Length: 459
Image (tube, rainbow, N blue to C red; front, side, top):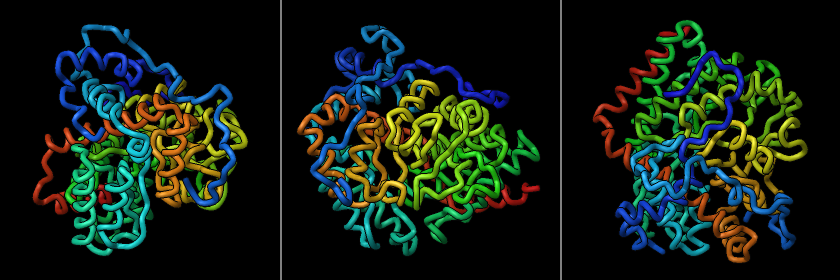
């Protein structure tokens, strides 16, 4: 992965490789040369929601107004095959922007939501994607019976996406980190915890990184065989050890450099398999001594301490081209005191402006205790800077809330299109890579062998 320096222990200055702001300005040029011709033929709230307005940043709607331009928007030498700093090509991003420009508020709102659902019936998530125009859904362990039911569900969701007039794949995500967090259970290969990946890298850095990359690539191919397009991994948190009540062995290491190595190796593996990753939980959950599934933990480290520890793997992930970063429900005093990072404009600003991230920002699950019951948490997170809203407690209510906010102007159309375009671009990237990288017939056998090799290498 280009640009990663494993000896570097602090975030690098923001990069300004072609990002969304530049591509949107260049979209008209690309349209003239025919890259996005025909794109316009496509189809052009939460518990406790209240009538009161959810406050947004004092300066107004944040992400839609932030300048992310790195090159002249009028540059006639635009190369549509030029990769962005986070995966999709300039052409794919321009195509996505042209596409979402024809959508109404309901479609834009759906494209920034990843739904949750109950039960095992494949039609339940399919209906959500078809009727609410969702970007996709998450499958949890409470939605999994066996391999046949899982593939029936992912196929139904893909069919629903097509029925809704979208020719790119749905976002079908799963928490499949290995170790304690593996929501597919026996349906997929059992991998050791990410801590073991860190142990292997510590023992033999070069060989360890290779084994982690091979394991995550094999895991990604197996996930694709089951119909998944996203994985909510890798965990970039740096654990503090026994005081860390939530992450623990989900973290690769207490050493930020080892954690960074493991994260970059995992990103390379999953990406090469054609699976979109969600590096988590920014700005770092590993030093929190409370569980965000229940409360908003307070991280009291200074900014200097964060830069030396918690932020190191995230900076490495951004440099390595991470397509998406998940923000945790953490109160980080040095960045956004008094509010969860997932709902704090300052946290999104920090990620984009200091770490230089230009990809998709997403929340942790909006059904977690840290944010459940807040007034319109999905809207608050979106106004703060989230591109994707993960698993609102009530998907239909969240969709209605975001739709109404776009229609009323509380969310500007520019802001809604910007986020929707980022998400569509990632899905176009996934579609392209998946077409280039076939899933082998023995994907499960390869996954089992890669997991066994990782276990065998552990000191």
